[in-house]
Length: 575
Image (cartoon, rainbow, N blue to C red):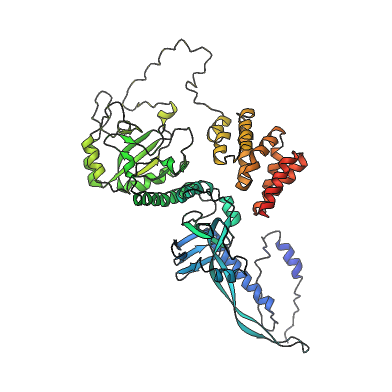
């Protein structure tokens, strides 16, 4: 007879505690262990459903949020009908939003909208709304509930949970000014580049599909690119440039169609509509005249050149420029622009050769295109361009109206006063020029043109109180006065400018009436840093949260009572 051994089970709790030192235990990732003879309850089965749901959502999060395919949104202003085409999207929570067929919603059917919202929305307020596609769970069918005790009675509960998507409107805390829709959309392009604002208002289980404007209880217009984004990770590179480029191309097409319908020509300036341009995009063909060397699309202080390019190289050239910052048309900084004239390989080989400079044996330069000889001027130049007008006329005739492009050029050596000398051919180093009378022996020869800048100077060249004042203009004279005082009292304080920038990113435009007077008072008391710490610690997404934080911090720091009263009134308007 064999010996029967007894093996104790041990202490499972102690075993689990020891795992904490060698493993990462996530309490959400718990599933039920099944075995014969075990009594299962609804909680055990729900645990497995939650586990599987969490695993699927983890995969979705790694793919990134946004529209994967389809989901084109359109609006008919005559019938008030929103139409959404089939497609896929991924929400911030990792939910797959799948629309299998066209979804049409009549914004004029107020009875249905009121019924779906428990009679809370009988009319639309004048505002801007984000159109979102949201994940929902619908309870269907009935199942009998048997009593677990003889004293209980039978009951009923829903039997199935069906996953679905629904179209909805989310109000945006942005003003709807009395302007032409094209100008309003252009302004929103710049404001909505800050994704913190949109992320705080769009539900995590939704994706944004566009922005709808409603005035006088009637939908006015739809921009299907604002707030919409393709599926990508949260911190994808060059996100602002990509978003702005997509929105700019859509709006530019609508501007050209609007001007054509009104019998207007397309020789307009970019700042007639836009204040910010992407580093690469299209432009109206009529705004460029390469034959006479003129352009009127970009500001006069922008160096603008034009060059033919192979059609196959356009995508690569645009991709390289998209790594550069967006173009601020209101800034005094010069931006080097190249207008591209795309040609087929055959046309490029024929016409580009005629624009090449001749071979120069003295300088040993090979034939090549010289952009400086193909410069475009905002007004008629006073001298004759060294270009072939007939060649450019032939090139321009072969380009369609929607093929003309521009790209921002990176800083070149010539723009920083640093020149390169070709040494591979054995040329001699030139002798330095003699010093002028104005030069002193104490000058640093390593910095002849003021090329070396400290970190604060570089920062203030791109971000300063002037540029922030243009992004968040004061709505009244009190704000203008406070902004001017900030400029006079703190002209070169890079640390203060950084704090002001972070403050404006955290405080919604709803509080613009008191923002600049508050910043001036906090800067004078050197109290801006503790207020920022409160704002950065805030995790609540509601627009009133930032106002409450500033109000509490300002009260503790002893801000004057009239300013506190204005903050309280603005917070109360949101609540």
